[in-house]
Length: 237
Ligand SMILES: NC(=O)c1ccc[n+]([C@@H]2O[C@H](COP(=O)([O-])OP(=O)(O)OC[C@H]3O[C@@H](n4cnc5c(N)ncnc54)[C@H](OP(=O)(O)O)[C@@H]3O)[C@@H](O)[C@H]2O)c1
Image 1 (cartoon, helix red, strand yellow):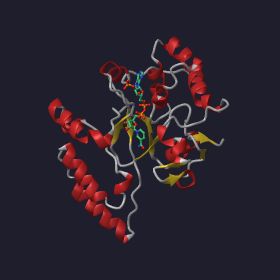
Image 2 (tube, helix red, strand yellow):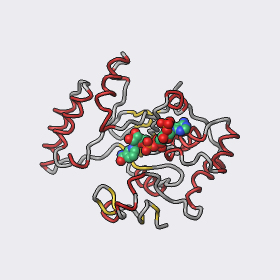
Image 3 (tube, rainbow, N blue to C red):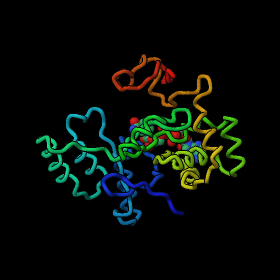
Image 4 (cartoon, protein in one colour):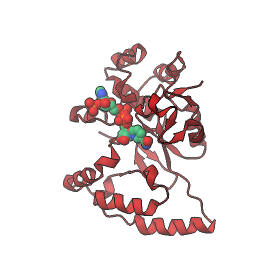
């Protein structure tokens, strides 16, 4: 099976479908699985995350991640050199991809346009909407017409509009299913592009918008994050 590739602005290519993990708990296991797979490291596109508590010490966090993953990387030295160039003001680091929540209830159309115009890809997290679309009639109809699952339809939409998708599943059958895309018709894309326009639909599906957090996310207000949301992760418009 061939996974489409997205060209990044640094000259590399990234698979359009990635296997989503819970990075903070999985780095050790992911590294072990990579080593045991005997797949050459050069054939694996590995992404991890800088936690919010490590924003002031990216180099240490990167080294800790690499240690846990147990994969060799020449990046630490490169990173040090890049940081010193940034300090001189000669260089600013342009992102290659922007990882945001994206699925038909939160399609991020404007952000996708903005990033595309700056040659930055979008990586869609929660791309199957945490499977909360399972009973959505318009999505089910497309799935039936295509002989595909709801998840496959949502992932195909994500890749067909040019984003990378990182579905997470603990189930091996569903992990394999999520790698098989279908070709959606223009009218299917239109339906999925516009699903969020229905009353009350334009929203995040992530749990970190709970009312106990009072309209904030990990200590940041929606305004600080630039998210046009109200409590519960619901978009204002
Ligand atoms: N950067 C960030 O701030 C951020 C925030 C949130 C998430 N993420 C990342 O995004 C990735 C995925 O996000 P997510 O887990 O929030 O949402 P998701 O991938 O949209 O949904 C995961 C849920 O959907 C189910 N599922 C997956 N494939 C399915 C299929 N084919 N059929 C039926 N159900 C299916 C899974 O259940 P089963 O396990 O039972 O299959 C799981 O409950 C993860 O790697 C996560 O770490 C990043």
